[in-house]
Image (cartoon, rainbow, N blue to C red; front, top):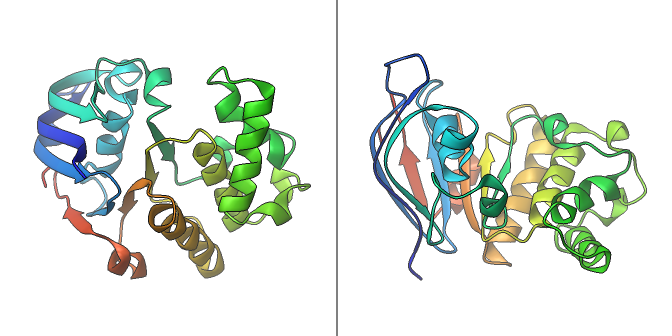
Length: 223
């Protein structure tokens, strides 16, 4: 399969500062790959993630140069809502992505905002329950869940949008070992069983690295 993500000579500095957070970054990720991006705090990993779905420069302003292509779209010039149908982003803290009073509401939030019919939204919700093996959470309230369960629901909400790519920005950094294992299991499954391209950011090298097709090391904004 060909490249689904391509970054060519990407440079970025945040508004009102001249310090480059990304410096001449060149990355190619092929469709279906499992890629781990690692490096120390401040290396530019989160900034890189936010360029992939267009949050930078559309919402977070700064000076962005170079070319970022995601599934044929220019990520810097395509509306974020349109990018959301191609690429999903899961954050460190699941509470930032949970809005509903029930798990079902959270799973339905993303696809509903794509303008899909109620029937299609619910079909995707059921698919998330089944494919991610989170059906036991169906009747639970998000605030009752453990950290690992919350992050599983966050992933389910992104998965329900049926993106080709999911980016995980240190998704287990706030979880205990049981929660980490649950999340890593889901990440591996959606890549190997369903062919979704995975970009996983990890501050520290972990067991998940052995499942990666490629490991990218960042330091001081460079690869």
